[in-house]
Length: 108
Length: 120
Image (cartoon, rainbow over all chains, first blue to last red; front, side, top):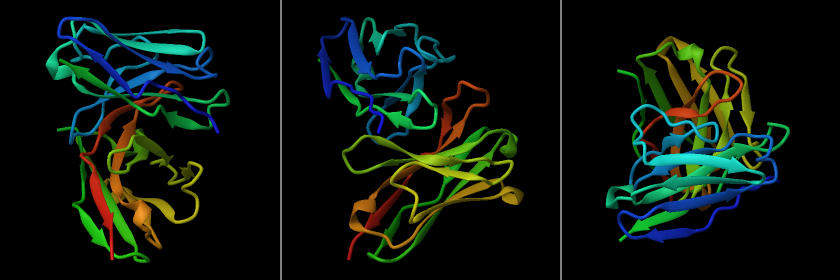
């Protein structure tokens, strides 16, 4: 079955840039999406189609994708950005939809 | 107001069944597909599948093909998830999520989740 691989945890100091990666064999052909989930809340999309930012999402959130790796970057990370971040995509056929295992971002 | 309102927490015994509801409001229900996502305690998100809100045709992810049923009642703009023969490992928060339309889609609206606890 198809898998997306993320680091379990990422830690940065406030004001630094946090980068969370997501690797998957189909990413050269398929878009990556990123969801933020704060404790006790439902997920929220922060990046769609590799690099697009929904309205209401701060400009410090950005996304990119190259080869088999997609990256979510949070520039000037804030304590309020502490959350779980999940990448999301499909296999090359588009039939298997998967979330990455999630990355816990700590800002301290 | 555009929203998905899910039913409340459930406590069930092993072997029982549960039916979770997800009521949509503020938009045309049949214009967007509905997906279901599971999150076990302390774990990540797991895509369960989706239902076409026009045809009622469900698609289930691997691992969710036997005891899980997606259904609709378009007259009350509500999607349902029924789980039968509950097991302890079904203990999780279950989310409904609206899928955007188009070839490239994502979840742009989520319910707040329904906690199902399976315990004797």
